[in-house]
Length: 408
Image (tube, rainbow, N blue to C red; front, side, top):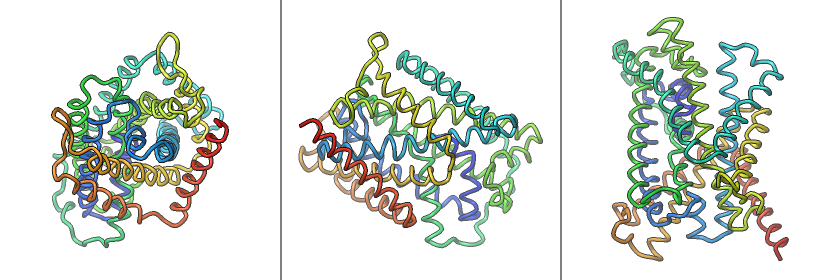
């Protein structure tokens, strides 16, 4: 999830794997995401109907593969990762509000949280965007303060690479880190509602991606430079630990609040855009038609929005942050692979993009490179994690078959 909870915990996790060589994982993920989003930029300028990744894959490979991708996207990635983020948000806030450790208070908090976000997004896209923009600005304040002030507290000796990590550790760290970089493509789910998609989509992707890469790398550098070897021992709240060294005790509270706002921003943004993937799949007959209902007054897919939020809250009650996050990462990588292959197929089937559409450099080389990097990252999954993804694909296939039988 882009600038979500990940950035508040990942510097410590990556340092535990790679030490002062953490920058290697950021560079690998930066290159990988750039290759993948080049494919997104091209296919996003060619297929402009709402649905994002699902629409691109369905256009290239048909309704069955499109349905599998939608299940991986909205359940395998979005629902599971948002549920994990909800758990992380409650755990983070419980540092300053201990009552949230009690089951009843957790439940009440989630009811209020999701009722507010669902209501805001049902009212309309504009109100949802306003909420998302406000939260985005608010969450950047503590991060920007930590980054700008922290630069003056860096000990350069802490940034020197004293031992090069193994390939397996680099791979494991990259798989974890890709979770933080994913999410920018969510804006494409509503591309049917965006003006001039061929120009707007690529520009938005790469401006956002570049900003995120600089921010992530800067925060990792500050945390590493301030804490040194101690960063690897602060895997739960590394930025808060760095803030404590820079600002004192109030720095921890600042980063706790910033982390909560960041997660809230991610959740509100996902509830704005991800239900449109469910809506698109239902509209095409691959999910129950009730999920394609549009509110008569506000013209928004209100049933999909309510259903999506309910699934997040339900899974959040079960906890298991780490398991949910790893499964979400594997799911989004499979979706990325589908989009890259869809870009390749449209190139072969329809030729190069026409004038006014985005044309990625290198022709078909970029999709091949993207799929190669994705495959390498997926190989970092454990056997149990891989079986979990296969089970999700199998269940999705069964649901698709049953849907077809019911239709007949």
